Picture (tube, rainbow, N blue to C red):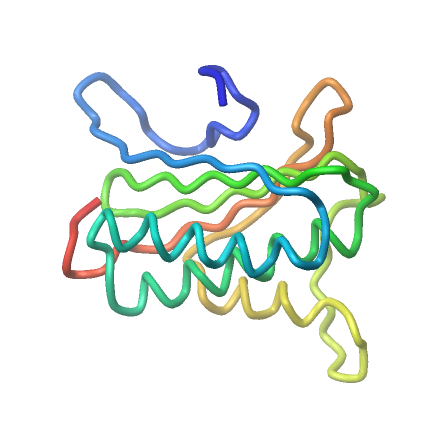
Length: 152
């Protein structure tokens, strides 16, 4: 992905001297791609030596956000970015479609959809979404503290 990508997080401090680890990948927006997103995330986090709760939470968050992009939008592909900086890991997933009003938490246990965002909400320190710009879809992101094995 080129510099200036819409996936570059808006809220992270990238002031001079800040070191960041960044990894991006794109997958077709098909249900089979969710497993591929988990596999790619695991491999990158292992390479970064990120372990413990942050590792497990990040894999689950990627899985849920990619699933939502595949199920709830009319996208041909899904972009994912992992960025580790300042002791925090940020996961961003961009779709090409547009769900009116963006993603919503479902607070009822009877609802078939929406529980994934409840998991994201409970496992992350913060999460949110914003338009990617130029009508190119939506970005949903989540942040969590990095594990103790590696300080991002």
